[in-house]
Image (cartoon, rainbow, N blue to C red; front, side):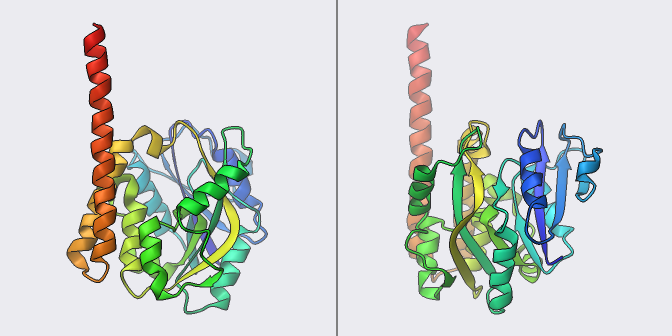
Length: 274
């Protein structure tokens, strides 16, 4: 096997079966490492005998689970997949083939399909989101360094639709818990502001689920604060990309202010109705 996938899980893990089945269905074999932070999912079933299951108590949290799983990888390449998302059957093969064909490339990422709670793909929404992340104008192949600012501006790299070399993980991992749910932003910013080479595959090979229980929906403020921390840490360490990172930082401060404004309006509404 050439590719490992790190999967964190916790709680009820409603969609983990679908996630694992998509990994098992890959056209090449993949080492699957699930770090389990006290989930209710049973790995005793013989269906999951191929899964490397790591149970951690107490729950180290999403960021900790992802790092622990990745640190246990034993392959040339590493990928990441949340327990509520899934891969297209050729994800692993096509991404590994890209890196094998481009030995100077360190990270390759692709487009995503966005699915609703019922598992159906929303193609119109998928096209819109891929455009909002600036991936609609990226061409397949090695990305020129001049495009790195574009990638930072639009946060173009989806963690769960990328594959990295394990040597890169050894240099830039583990994920930073101070960034909360924006740990992937911090992870990629560190690489984008260095000499790491990126590649892109236009084909959507990962399915990202939209649902009300997702982290970014439940913990908006924490995610925004984590993003601010991630961007600030890069500004301290790097000057070449300061301008674009500064404007991204302003964007998140604006989001935080907007969130507080919305909360204060709700509080005032209930105060006035009592």
